[in-house]
Amino acid sequence: MFEKILIANRGEIAVRIIRTCKEMNIRTVAVYSEADANSMHVQLADEAICIGKAPVADSYLRIDRIISAAEITDVDAIHPGYGLLSENAHFADVCENCNIKFIGPSSDAMNALEDKALSRLLAKKAGVPIPPGSDGTVDNREDALDIAHKIGYPVLIKAVAGGGGCGMRIAHNDISLVNNFYAAKNEAEKAFGNSGVYIEKFIEVSHHVEFQILADNKGNVVHLGERDCSIQRRNQKLLEETPSPLIDNRFKDLRKKMSRAAIAIAKAANYTNAGTVEFIVDEKGNYYFLEMNKRIQVEHPITEEVTGIDIVREQISIAADNPLSFKSVQSEGHAIECRINAEDPQNNFRPHPGTIKMLYTPGGRGVRFDSHIYAGYSIPPYYDSMLGKLIVWGKDRPDAISRMSRALSELMITDVKTTANFLQTILSNQQFLRGNYTTNFVEKLLKESSN
Image (cartoon, rainbow, N blue to C red; front, side):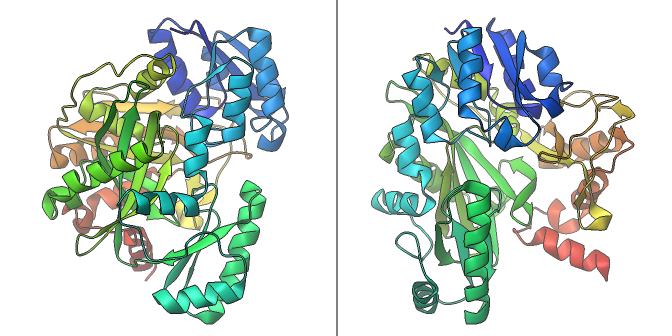
């Protein structure tokens, strides 16, 4: 097992990884920007090294500085967390060339799945359904128009790199296609340094369901069940739950079909470590492959709560060339995660950085709060607005919803605006309570509240 691991990330995921490392008696090294000098992950790690100024381009995305920090502190491995360099195949290669283990998939597996347009083709070869669309990147508006006419509007223009809804636009006619085609390319270039986009059919009434995968170096590939991530705003997830109410209430046979498809894609890419295969499901129960996230997901804790499996521990163990630590997966109960963001829902979810004057986090049985904040912490304006993740477990879905509502009512974060009250509104909505929601749920809710 590794003796020392560097965490090439920040915020709550860095704290999350440090906690598991401590339980495994592994020493940790935190890297941080000047803006994160007082962040919790810096205080919890055994060692910490500043790697640059506040912007991620000058710090957390600087491979040379991260590798220098790793060599100075003599680490065995690097855990990239999520976002930032976590899906960067070149970074994984550099780590291996420097005899530092990258805790994640191989660069070959990353390359096979890096380009979302190419991963569509891989899924197709594996016999997994994909939405109608282009057979690769689309380079000009003439080709874009041809494809849109062939598959029919509305269509989705998507960046081949990155995620989080960046470089993603919907077009309902020729005019909006041309305008959004170039807008998506420019946005993708700025965000990911790759302007490539592809086009696929946009399924207007849909559900976003993903399967957690773990694969070791011994040929074992398993899934840990699904997560329903349909509560989104502008393609950004706000609330996730497992198991999926869509599958439990309407399409129970999908669990077996989609889990097999997820494993088939992982095997086709020779994938190892943790990953998530994302699907979209329409109202008739048809499912289509979206992409595979080649890292740990923000929402991984709800899977941990129902299975009892520490996914970060498994990641580290797999990277150390050990087999999976379990023989079978047993899922029990229901878990929900709410993302607590420093945003003002009353002002179009505008980011709200500032200093937290008082913090009280909820507790009790089945309640978990993964975060890096504390009273007196100043939220930097340079990064993602997520302050933490409130996770609850219940014996069933109604029990989990009740516990989450109670936990949200206890959460106190002053003097910054957060999304906690808006999440309470979601939890009390009758459609949500019935498990009858799609990816346009939040959009409809906001429209109703503004009328």
